[in-house]
Length: 354
Ligand SMILES: NC(=O)c1ccc[n+]([C@@H]2O[C@H](COP(=O)([O-])OP(=O)(O)OC[C@H]3O[C@@H](n4cnc5c(N)ncnc54)[C@H](O)[C@@H]3O)[C@@H](O)[C@H]2O)c1
Ligand SMILES: [Zn+2]
Image (tube, rainbow, N blue to C red; front, side, top):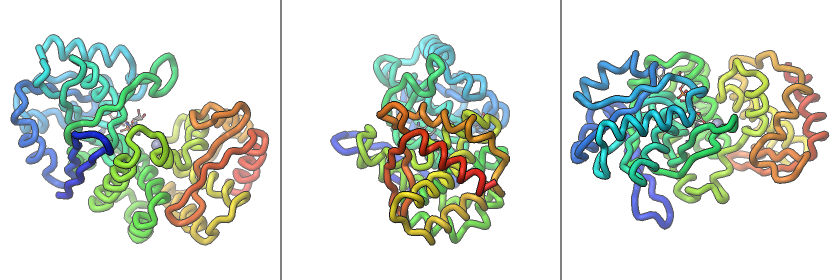
């Protein structure tokens, strides 16, 4: 069991992340035992696959089950959860236990921040993406008026329990999705990159080593500890994401993490064309992305997806696209380029890739 303590600058409280076998079975019951009333929030898939096990571990605790999927990360779900919490009579000394992927963590964390102006919450991430990424850092949100994560708050869970047992039921698509974010972390940390390269065969076959999950959590926690409110350093976590979001909107059938791998390949090449880069490193990084992707999928025409990059939140000027691109081992650069240039180069890169 690895224990990672996340302490934000200027914040008295800490958030502890337990990572390893037994995190759910042993650590969670111990950590929540002193809270008066407990309430579980999960989604329909996790309930179907893990509901019986959850009740065996946590006993007869009231549960609210949301329908699974990003399309339910809405105000309806948030308020239905708050209503269920109020009906169960939760008060200030109660705690909410969120058991699920990033959607459950984001909606539950926001509900915990809002209920009685804030009650304690604990997160049990059950997808690989939630374990290595979304459960670390205290960002919570719902999608609102068609905009992803428009309404949210920063709210650190008291503790996170990243237990690999849950990954045994995860569909391959969701495993690859989480690996996409692990590779992104590798592009930001030299040490992590070396470890990913050593385990590339396992990653390509979607067998994720538990120690790598803990290393990824520790890396993200170290970034968040320095910049909890995303005023600077934390923005590095957007590496590859401008292009990834555009591809994700256009492709629909590919997971977020797969689009992050594709976005990293595109943005590495964009960086190579205009900055002094470590060429052999970028070669290694993009080869790793390709290996984990299992080849480059068919992509829509560049004219269809490149305009979607203009929607990215990092863009500060009209008709300009900002990317967070890898340039060397553990180093990245923010590059702003006029849309016409981005579109032209993305077209050339795509023609070479596919
Ligand atoms: N808060 C943050 O910092 C942060 C960071 C990254 C992503 N996010 C958010 O996270 C969400 C994506 O997270 P996600 O990929 O976990 O999506 P998700 O929560 O929708 O889970 C993906 C699918 O896996 C299912 N599932 C969950 N656990 C399972 C298990 N153990 N076995 C089988 N199926 C299981 C879910 O029901 C769902 O169908 C997005 O809404 C994104 O905005 C938040
Ligand atoms: Zn991402």
